[in-house]
Image 1: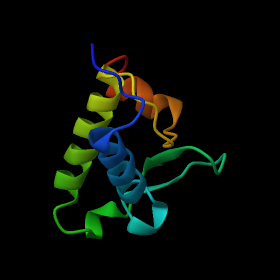
Image 2 (image 1 turned 45 degrees about the vertical axis):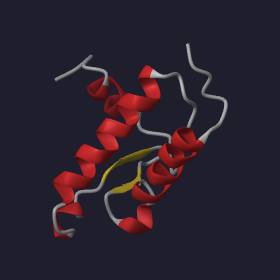
Image 3 (image 1 turned 90 degrees about the vertical axis):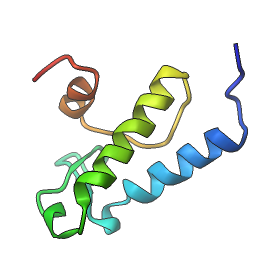
Image 4 (image 1 turned 60 degrees about the vertical axis):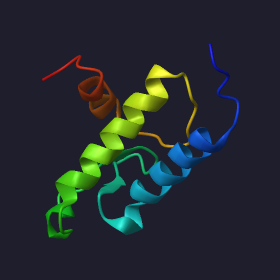
Length: 87
């Protein structure tokens, strides 16, 4: 088993998630608790936004599968949906 305490892939995944999930980028915005993130209803104005969401999903899947800790906080309903717990 590989260690994910650091390394280029872990750093890359963390940096890309931080950039794409930054509310100023427009894909996500803070929920009512002003801490957790959820998809922004105005993200449709971003060209090819679905491609960015797909990239975020793939990176989130990678970090979950490999037990990598990142500093992105999604809302509980969004996490449940990502994990296939709700439809």
